[in-house]
Image 1 (cartoon, rainbow, N blue to C red):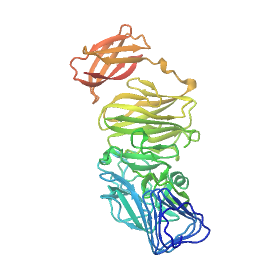
Image 2 (image 1 turned 135 degrees about the horizontal axis):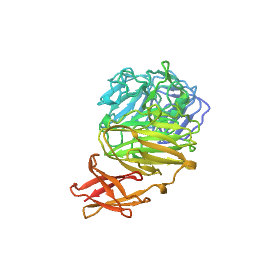
Image 3 (image 1 turned 60 degrees about the vertical axis):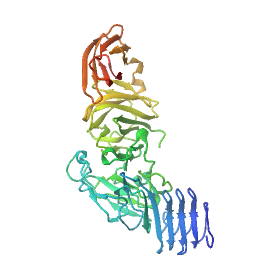
Image 4 (image 1 turned 30 degrees about the horizontal axis):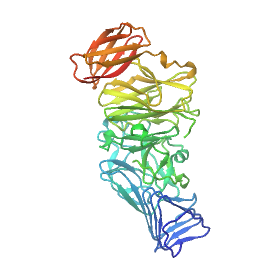
Length: 522
């Protein structure tokens, strides 16, 4: 590439030293592969546009300017080395603007100043594991504006499109981690979660990072706004990746991690012992640099969310042949309560909360308790967002308070009234192999509607019930009506006089029937 202006480059295989002395522009999505060494002379500029790639297998010497626009990548061979070039690399990364925080890391060997204002580092020795004091932030967050250490992560608000400049990292980078015993809810100082970051000007593979670092838990947490527009820590949450799957932060699993950590991206990971060091190598680098936070087909996966009052939180439960009944480093992700207003988690036998839980496909019915934490009570919906590969199982949602036992299909929504605060012993998921399953038709059902006659009409099917209790709750979860009903041929009415116009949740309960429905009084 000597004495020429290249406006478009395609994949090039070269078996000799490559020297660039002119202006080179690599169009978006275009790849340039150099299988020997490359020098960018002091007269040369080399720009790789969005989604493009420059791969250099040998030594790379930059004496001019090399620019990698947002989502572009610089990949190196596993033994590729850097020369003593006098030039400057520019690596651009699109972060969020406005009041939204991003987790950042630097792809440069030395860079001063964290993107965004204000900006912070996270001190795991000062942080704790008690979410109740996280408003406005966990004690581990410390204001910071100094040098960004390769492999470390930082938080910054509203940086927008940011440009890192200097000399890029390459080869092995080792970042020591802080260890404290995992003790969820403990207000004592110390947490095993460390804020780290991708140190390379290319994406890295989550699976490769976890496989090469057995001293860390295999779940990677990304901070992301909940897609509501961003209004601070209280309405944001963590997206999670591990070997079971990915959880996003928006409705319908929006923003779920794609298995790669992009350039400039910070993340949290949990150390498992006092000697844990997070090792980054060129073998982890990958050309998939598009996603910024901003599988296996054999796995049975249930994505279940809790929704209501403009709030959203989701968990993932997977059935994997190589999972165990205990905590698996590669498949289970503890719950980090990032959203102060709402939290949904699955529970193990010791009461530990999980955002992602995996266990072997059960041969008999298995019950998974759920925990819920809400800042305000009201009417909420459990929503089976997605169900994959459940051909051999029925999954039931069970409300122990109302007796509801609902067979879940993809898209099923179950409406419940939940009070503010912690709820640990009310909601369960039951995973039932077909051989022991019951049929949905065996469950009684009810049809309720509010008529113009100021009466609530109730029609039961699948039961010969003669009487039952009816309770009406307003949308704040307050009980406003409680009375006994008498049925004739499965039908009855009850007055709604004295109730304000609006929506209510009606619950019909007896030894045979436990159903809840929303009604609208006009």
